[in-house]
Structures are given as structure tokens and as C-alpha cells.
Image (cartoon, rainbow, N blue to C red; front, side, top):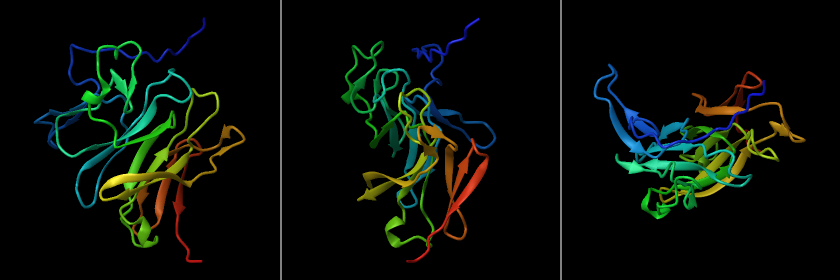
Length: 215
């Protein structure tokens, strides 16, 4: 018997909790949907100054090597709809569900990330050990692709901000992918008390500590 993963998506109408972001009180009461149109969000973090909620979202599989992008989204207030399953990224209409939906009618991602990089945990840098240019900048752990002809991701990315908005998206730490084969897969990032950056890896089973040494 052959088992094949099709990774289908669907339009769930019977339960509004699907493809949404919810919050509740610590005792489980007060459950509320605060955002919709989310496919697969894993990482959440709050900006240390604005307190806005930032989140990654993994893009749809099996649409091609280079589409759709993963997303970095921001939720400054409740009620946003980020487009799924009708639209992916800023402008990629879903071939099945997007025909009658204009992508510009949904909340666009604050930044389009690489396609299939599997952006997971993220954290704003709050330490003082790195140079000042890293203060309040965003680190994202990319777990890496599984369905792309050439693997991508498997790294920690740095998103630089200017006036509260993402300005650039660049590699900060890499090397887990070598010769097209991955020996490690970053999952999450965290600020350590000493100002270093911790990176977890669920493939190699390790936690790495990245520190800064003055040249």
C-alpha cells in the first residue's frame, strides 16, 4: 500500500476557530477569535516598545518552488483577516479558493519571507551584549523546506526594522544545510540573561548559544 501526503486545504465553514488566532483567560474562560485567515502560525512575540503582536505563518505547500512566500505578520489590533485560504502572501491567489477574492482586501503580511523556508519561532533582541544596531531587531528561526526541489531555510534570519516597520531580511546564522543535506533544523530563538542568543534545533537535539565578541 502506498501512502501519499497531499496536504490539501479546505474551506471550513462549520467552525470559525479554524485558520484563526484565539486568546483566552488563564482559566480557559473568555475564548475569543482575534484574527482570521491564518494557515500555520507557530511563532509569536511582542514588540518590546509598541507591544504589537508579531507572528510567522507558513505558506501553502505544493504550489511551486518559489510560491507562496512564508509571512511575517503583525496584529496591532484585533479583527484582521490575513487572507488564507483565498490569498497567500501579498498577491498570490489560491488556484481553488481565490478566484472571486481580491488579495488587497485582506491584511497583507508586514514582510514576505522565503517560500517554504518554514519560519517558526521569532524574538526581538532585548539584550545588551550585541552591538546597539541589533537592539529591538527581530530574529526568526527557519526550520527548512521539505517539498522544494532545492532545499532552503535551515538558518536564523535577521529582520531589521526602521520606524517600526521591517526594512530588510538577511541571514544571521547558517550552516545547518550543507551540500543540499540538512544536519540541523532551527526551531526557536530566545534571549539569554547574559545577552547571548539561544537557538533550539529539534533535528540534532541541541541548543546553541550565539554570543558576540568584540573584534
